[in-house]
Image (cartoon, rainbow, N blue to C red; front, side, top):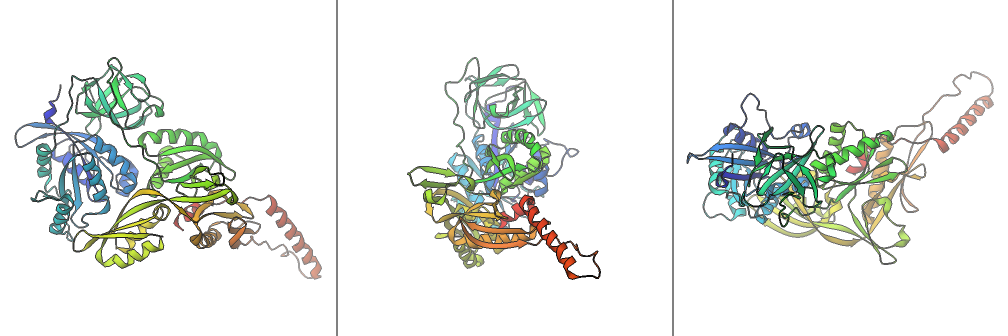
Amino acid sequence: MIMDNAKIRNFCIIAHIDHGKSTLADRLLQFTHTIDNRRFREQILDDMDLERERGITIKASAVRMSYKAKDASVYELNLIDTPGHVDFSYEVCKSLSACEGAVLLVDAAQGVEAQTVANLQHALEKKLTIIPVVNKIDLQNAEPERVREEVRAILKLEEDSVIMASAKEGIGTEDILERIVREVPPPQGSNDQPLQALIFDSMYDIYKGVIVYIRVMNGCVRKGMQIVMMSSSKKYDVQEVGVFRPAMDPVDALFCGEVGYITCQIKEASDVTDGDTVADAKQPAKKPLQGYRHLKPMVFCGVYPVNAKDFDALKGAVDKLKLSDASFVYEVESSQSLGFGYRCGFLGLLHMEIVQERLEREYGLNLVLTTPSVVHRVKDTKGNDIEVDNPGKLPDPQYISEMSEPYAIAYIMIPQDALSMVIDFCKTKRGEYKSTEYISQSKIKLIFEMPLSEIIVDFYDKIKSMTKGYGSLDYEITDYRVSDLVKLDILINGQPCEALSSIAHREKAQFKGRALAEKLKELIPRQLFEVIIQAAIGSKILARTRVGPLSKNVTGKCYGGDITRKRKLWKKQKEGKKRLKQFGSVQIPQEAFLAALKI
């Protein structure tokens, strides 16, 4: 049955992390009877265990609802839920491209935060209709009137069109649905045009192959028809067409304006690219749809299996993970101490942590991750420009003319009473103050320029601590600037451990080297021989510590007699330990690599 375009609404929910997106999606599904109470569970659209445990949305997910409005018309609503954390902004951008409207959700206690503003900007760039909602008005510490004014200020609203709601209690749910059907425009396009469908996501199924999530912009896609991927020109026969309710539900066809999925027995994960256009192989469209801006990962680290035999399993796992996370990139690399693995690129540290947990849980792998680093630009003495994402690729110091590091503009939203503390902290991170904006009487937006390497590790956590949980952060990369950077090496018994090497600013290298050496002393287990830990820049040693050898009382069996007998045994033991030190290897535990991240 062909649905009238005028009765279709495609929208998403955008907000800062933990402002109630998943809870509002639950209420909408219950109010429209898309899911009955018997099958309902909290965070129904967050189908990953990891999402449910952490209480955050990691992946965008789609669902179709039928809603009978007050005007007695039945509307088809396609909701695409989005994440809120800055590391998953790519998922938000993909969702916005498949929608005509967005519900902007703001917590009545927290107010407007950094990611609220960032996601709103993305939605306005795509020219989406914005429906503002203040959520959690039932909380004891809620300040709905203050937050309503903040929302009106950022949207520049003259009339009071902000909906007051509580997703947990179901307050305002009907008002939100009525505003969606009234204000969000129906999709453009026609069923009579050649097929053009935007791929906005995909996942891998061992029985069906790659499941492709699409939004049909023109034409229709039916079971049995032959399609072509316009970027690769590869052709496939459609095996199944369906929609999400929220489980996959097969239908005969998807028409213009609708959101759903297709399967074509695609076995190679690399054959499907987010942002690609699906067309009819017999009557292809003249040009592809505008895809997604290619997102460049800014944090890189090595991912290695603990057991070298698991490398093939890791290879299959990263290929399949790439399908459901287009912002994740990887290439093969090898290490003397860790064997074969992958150099992987991430959008931030939370993204890196989530990818590691998914690889270990979903594919049963045991992994070691190296110290993360950003992409540096190096100009050598011959005038060549080199991009370095791994400290091991850095040329020798005598061949380096200058080094540059990426800078970012950080937008920090904080309460007014934390202003001086946060400004002082940002300056210790080599931040350069730009401006202050007053969002309301109690909330301030600080703008700083600082190196990306100072932001990616623990910056957000420290801001949260200083502001008692009320601070928030968003950042965007601006340019590269020349800095006084050095390669910091960690030597274990005189041998460099490249997995712990990093590129640091010269001013901070000594502090970081000493802190890391002391932490490794605690974490490396004692051996039968002495372990010397050193932090160095080139041949200059910055810090040195040692892990003492395990003691064995070789003279315990001696009693009475001359001291020379004991001295003989001690000398023999000393020579044995010296020989063992030459051939023995030190196993560095995973905790040591994790500790390196936090220094």
